[in-house]
Length: 296
Image (cartoon, rainbow, N blue to C red; front, top):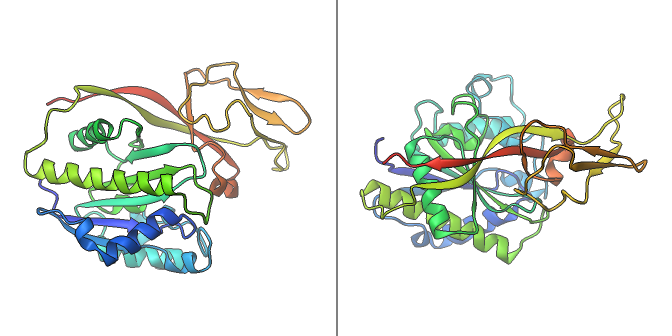
């Protein structure tokens, strides 16, 4: 892989996820805090209008607008769709991007701690995950490489390399010091990794490490008319990345009943009861635990 030169650090993709926004403000005042000798780093405030209105988005989720087809469709012209095209022009265009690497900063209301979401499972990303875990043992690495970068609809997929820093728990429109500190540490650690990678100066990394790979999303229980009839079970709530096996309770119905997990694999839920996902009645994501092995 060619060296990474042009890096974009993006915050405020969702206007009520405050850690990335306030870190951007800090770094824009003191750009030397992000500076690395081999990197040209720019900061991007993705959705300022949503921040001004204290909302996740104005018209639609900005972080779902970055497929090649959506970016090319000029009929998609609401606020976030237009912002996506402007950001793509600034950092992309997707498929031939000016940016080599994008770090997109997010908060979650779920109890996920400092989580690094990798959109590819190539050697560069596997080594990045190993390096971050080496420097931040409390971190979690998740691979969402189920589709290609071209097919991904995330902002970070504009570039050929992109990651999502996802830190929680933090309520919407709130700042928590522990969460902001984790985000700053993880962002700096990723930039350190890229700098060392560029200079062939990485120290020895663990030969293997545990991570998670996304499998599916579960919806909250609904009746035949689409009305919500239950909630995440208390045994699951706040237990992100703790295993679920067949027969474990997963939802509690408002009428007192329970729904148990019936999957045929040991599942590791995350984004549990994420407030932003209630728009789509999503309860959680499920992943599998994997062992990542470095090949060199």
